[in-house]
Length: 375
Image 1 (spheres, rainbow, N blue to C red):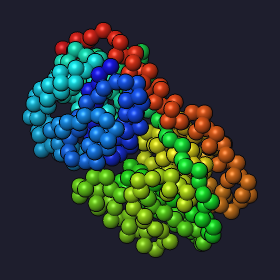
Image 2 (spheres, rainbow, N blue to C red):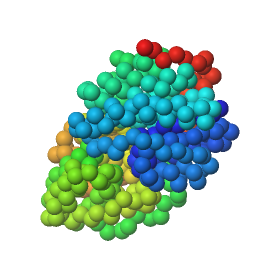
Image 3 (cartoon, rainbow, N blue to C red):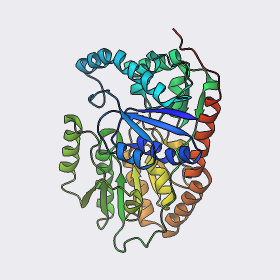
Image 4 (cartoon, rainbow, N blue to C red):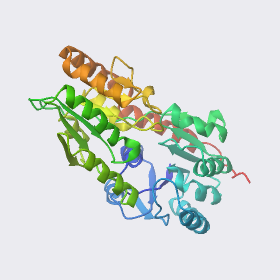
């Protein structure tokens, strides 16, 4: 099978990591793929190192979050040319299927009228508004299928795509190397992810302040950096660092090996915003046997069995209270939660399971008859 894979970013984020996880299985199946992305990010050499051709597409740059009128005008004027580029790339790849790894390229793929099965991999929740309407309308026009990473992310697309065209496949993550012993000394609590409002670093600071008052020896770590260098992202990063000044918090920066960061922690807090999906770092913590306390946000309750393999909180104050209870209570509770998390990963969230389920969806659609775009 030949695939044309369209990604809206070439910088390395969660959706891009999911694609990098999938490509070796595509290669091992003997399929070919052309991967097209905008920009000049780290994804280009990494995709080529896995044995796949890449092309650069003209899409953006745009500000993250809500788009300005100038962004929308730029997007609209660039749409016909981008659609022509996608048609040309589909012909070059002799594509049997188009795999769209994010919503930004959906309108151009729909306008291209490729007469090919199209699969949209939906990694994040799009709130109501112009972006969701445009993406959903494009899905309907293309007669596309949707692959969502949780039920919460899948739900908005049911207004545009019939239920039988929507599949849910939870992310999977690799097994960490055999861990060494965690550092001795005071408890260590962290959060890991892109530094942005939706990931909740300021909420982490609020919880850390409460924990510090109850457990003064505790040390805190914020792993990550802003993914986008726009003004809003940099302002948020500056606020986080300023508010952290009074607390024993370290900023180790972005880590290529998330398991190295997790090996440094006794407890992971995930204070993500209400529209978060399931977030990979929870699954990675499960694989590493690191207990998790997360806000009850978005799709997160779908992957945490509260009280067994993690804890769910309704507020940062409750998150802090749960953390204090774990850190000052019977150590066996932390150990039991760690074992349960590791077992949950091995049953539900391995990389092999993820690859095989996604490839099963792709293979089923690739065998489908050619489709006409709807007017």
